Image (cartoon, protein in one colour):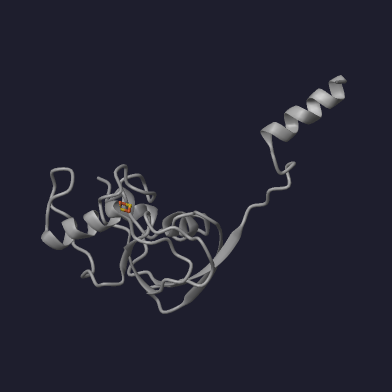
Length: 153
Ligand code: FES
């Protein structure tokens, strides 16, 4: 086998589709607190929180300056899903976190921050992943960096 043939073989082993893989994108609609709607195009497998953040919409204070919290249990990224088309199914970690909220259990040794009441349509933005187009999601609140940092002084 020539050096070119070896290189070609290695490339095919490392990248079976020959480098033709494409990023799959889907659209979701966020209904914002001011009544406006924002249609987002996002990469497949992004969480709703990541999709919103990539479009300049901060939907959680989280514990990491607007991003997801370290353990996915703070519950600050609660959303109301009006149409769950294309979203991942709820897994046990998300379900446990919502149940902890409903039961008023503390998080990281602190009482949980109040938020909108939980409903059967409540999802956590950092857990629910976009697997297809069509979801419609009510965002109860938006945050700014000032909200996240808190009042200084
Ligand atoms: S950011 Fe903490 S549960 Fe989603």
